[in-house]
Image (cartoon, rainbow, N blue to C red; front, side, top):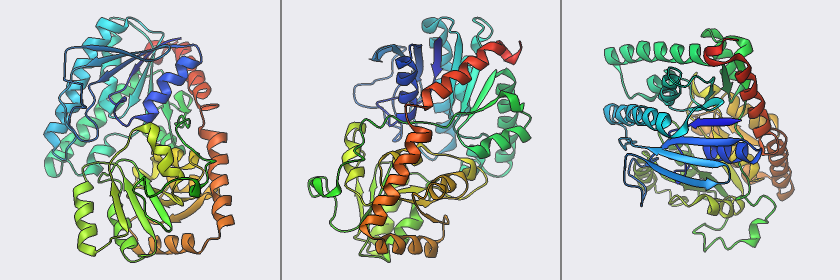
Length: 414
């Protein structure tokens, strides 16, 4: 297939999932044209060497061509700049897709944000091809739950975004969901059940070191503490609910929490740790993807964290797959599908989001675990990854869903 892949996020941004989708589909023999923006996530500042231009072309992997479209760089807490970021990408990508990609066999849209679907839908007018929406975040829920817009403006935004999402669903020949709960939500919103495909994300684990013994690494050189260490590696955002973890670990000085990454909540988290005297909470800057594996392997346990809301209960962050692939036990500070994946596999411990006492109980369970129990839970995590979320199964599953969408044709009609 010739696949036109629209995604607002792509490396050098920490966008492991979109890169895996593009490179692994290409490895199956498909031609992938990626339409993306100029990198500015998660800080809102352009990555070094990437000034905004009308167009930029790259070839990061065999069979993958990247076409970068201009956008307004922003990823802060203010609603208007964030909206400008989303909408400017949609506008720029629409022009670049038409000029540089041609007519693919199918459009694959990484639907986070939902506005990423605009270029593919607009292309229906000039170069008709079926559209497959790969839903990462449910909209308008992601916007309304984030608190960006409230009051009367929030009500208007919710109605407008609901109508927009229904519009994109009507144009889609297929809709992929990354968690079981998403299917149920979309069915209640009128998406035909036979058009919904379960396509959980997979990740490339070549940069991870699941078999490496923790003691084989120079933890001091990595900036890691001695003693039991839990590691959260990823976006330090508001929806992650990391404040509860900092508060809990402040009460367990024997346990260490390492927060590896960057994001809009980082400064607040640093201030909270200082206020609580939590010297066992360590902040490390984001590192390149190829270096993450050493940090994960050097930890005793991984952390997955999300606030609790109806939306987030059906969200499956890629952090879950990465934690499982690392072959370490997992503390799931989340509810719904993300927690059930971890506990169902016997891969770790679950704590109720926002509940300090529940997090303390999970920390205590980890501290009390024997070395053999930690290894057993780590193996269970790795086994679940290989069965459900590895590059050996994920790309074929998505390719089959794209082929099913192609049989329906544009706008889901035979």
